[in-house]
Length: 201
Image (cartoon, rainbow, N blue to C red; front, side, top):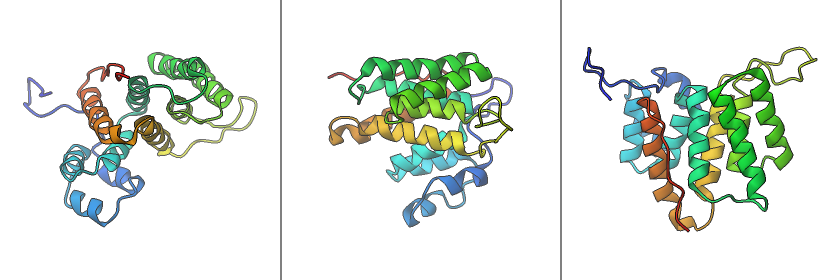
């Protein structure tokens, strides 16, 4: 999306590529693909062109602001079928994460983590909720001294959520899913909702 006043692309992806790159686990091909890039938008395009879709999703997970990143993880988890034995519980976790996105209070952040803990952290939905929790100012219980999460923790959780959502069911679907996830991410980065329709059976 272009700004009507400047004509430049408006994006929520971070301009601080140096902060993002250390968390992408790039191999030599990946490092070569992003060599010389000055921002996350350019790096994302290069990774996609190189077919490095997993690395591209990691970049987005770390380059989007926390709320947008968690929302993206929730959208991707909705797109694919629940992976566990209790789809209702996974949906409840995702709803808790989405509630934090809509109203990012400490209460909602901690509620999301509680729901993730209840499911054993085994799903895309759970890691979206962990991403919400790690976006706050402390990982410690309310009554304990604050233990701030590292700045990249939300990105790690969101990247894990995306990987789990992409890996559900037949492996042959993974690359198509990743491409759709990245389309969703770019819509979110441009200010859209990034919604994805549920994947057909």
